[in-house]
Length: 112
Length: 115
Image (cartoon, rainbow over all chains, first blue to last red):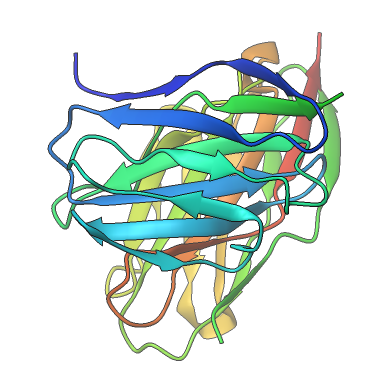
């Protein structure tokens, strides 16, 4: 079945460490997105990519980095510069023919 | 700027009650889409509906219905005869201006349906 796979589901990070969240899709979608969700809040866009080898900053890109070397993959790195990384991270993809986004099941990151 | 407002932070109902979730939006676009998503406790957002601004007819899908009022910039979502499985966070969303594919989400409404 086509879809988006995010891994790991839960991730614990020590302060000062970088961690990378995986997002893989087999939907052949051109565009991919990373959102951050904090308790009781909506989704805020971190980075997005409309095509391979190209990506743009979203509303809260500071402390994060991404790459888009393959169409299927859009990993997100949470760097030590991100001051408050504990949150739920959602990856999504879309195509012009798609009815909105398809979301992954999310990664819950906790700083310990 | 594009904006989506879901003024209801939390709603609690008893099973079999009808419930309406409000969504008000602001946009400079003359044509646009609107979306509703459901986020159950598992965390994944599930697509519910996409509505084109050209089409102001109400849409019904089983126990779900949507009332789109362009004149008041609202796109409200009603669940009829609510069930415990409807308990989730519901998000209304609107594409950003330009052709970025970005979605602007409301803050979400947490619906709790009690047995």
